[in-house]
Length: 331
Image (cartoon, rainbow, N blue to C red; front, side, top):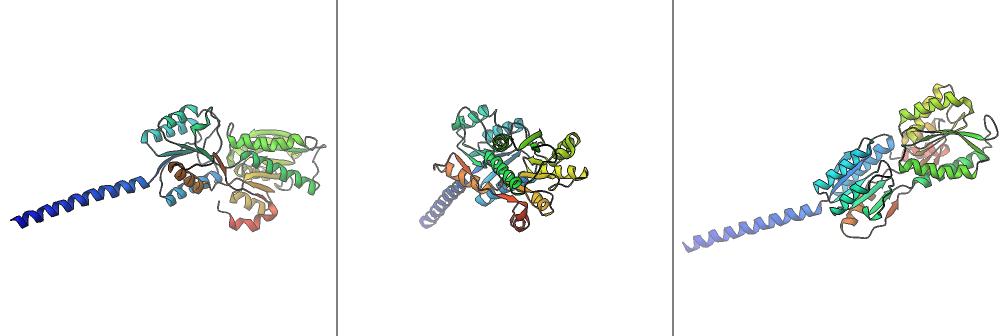
């Protein structure tokens, strides 16, 4: 009887130990997985799709539970998403700001909840920089500067002459009004124009909302107003440039020849256009920011010091390298 009781007690103790061990293992596993809330602005272009895919794949590779939200180009949707992430008790929040301003209140709510925030791709303006821990992505102003530098060298090296008058006439397709991409690229490119006012004249500058369809529509309007006076098109992204190319062809003109086409992003579509002689240059804006985001998030949550701003590497690709570079492009 004593042996039976002892055996029962021993088995019971083993079950208790096993149960405790299982609970500890489950807790340990749970502690390892980070829960991130991520709000994307939408899917307005090839570039944005590549950016989204990079974030999703990087989260999967890093073992991070990604709560993804598509704002569909509306700031109010992003604010709702961030508040939802706070309510869910995520470990960290990351988002691509649609516009620069209007974030102070919701980011203060995240800070009060002790949830760190990482800004991705675009910049924002807040009264207190401690409302976010880091910003990763691209330097939009530098992209605009690179675009102008390429253009100025190209027209000089090729002795490009205006169709009419003494100055080269430009039209500009701007990005979303109020977005850091549009503001930064306008500033970088505009500084170059201002320093060379004797060579360039801006006929018109209007938003194409970063979409191919809108880029085509606005370019059609430019062509109706200015026709063959246009020497150069500068588009804040490739998708708008691709839409504009359609409009130029429909008007019986040759894009890349009758009108110099310069844009920013570096998506495969514009490389194909350059190979076909329909575009002249693209300045890279690297969307593959997911791995850097996940790496930064892990460091932040581990209490490690991270740089406030980290930029990914970017290049400039004129048409004469397009065919060689195209097979290497990942987006």
